[in-house]
Image (cartoon, rainbow, N blue to C red; front, top):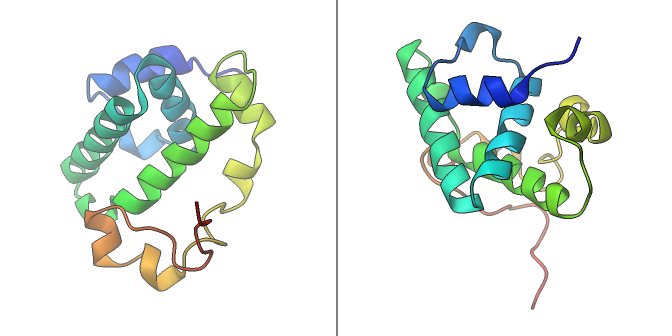
Length: 133
């Protein structure tokens, strides 16, 4: 059964998210839709604000992590720009590693990515050096 990510994103942008049923796949699909609708900075702000607000509403405000959120949005945006996808469902089907693996693991130590600082602000990776320009 296919998920209607456009409709789910409409609900999401109205802060009408059922946090208990919002899976990691839903996070990726809604992120894809938001990045399709908005420029990166607007999508990142709105997506982060909604996730943080909804998590806080259900008593899980300490779970929101700015570093993980921005890093995942960046990966999704980069892949969107590098491929041709027929919507969120197609993107997810062609990027299953985002659901089955942790693409941030080679970049961040567990201590850094799970730190209080990473929850509050975006941190650069500490395991894989950034390329020199």
